[in-house]
Figure 1: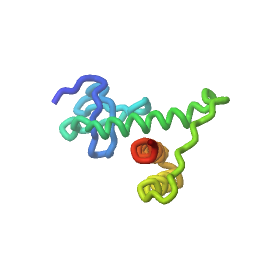
Figure 2 (figure 1 turned 120 degrees about the horizontal axis):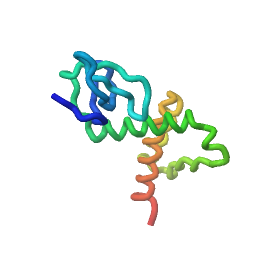
Figure 3 (figure 1 turned 120 degrees about the vertical axis):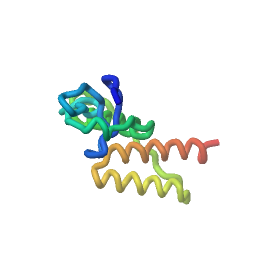
Figure 4 (figure 1 turned 60 degrees about the horizontal axis):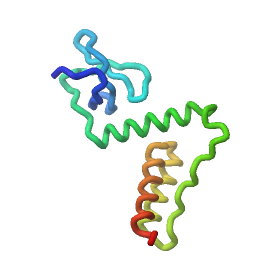
Length: 127
């Protein structure tokens, strides 16, 4: 199946989402979302990335940029992560997920937990 350059595809051999670049012989050439080294993939095994996979790949690329472009962040304070509401099991669960992700250096999952915790607090803990 032909793909348009820039299409986000799932490569099951690497379990990664890549941006379709072009063909090179029998291979499809994919590049990590946000840039990086291309890799060859079997074009018959590729499928379009789901909305969740596209979102996750974009968040991972943004997190990578934030970690690698530190000089541009000098003097900019990061927002404080949300604190769990006392006695709320949902808040505690999300805060635990955030702590586990941080300990594993999975900054994408940490950011996801912060977003979910903020959303939960807006919906369930604010008048």
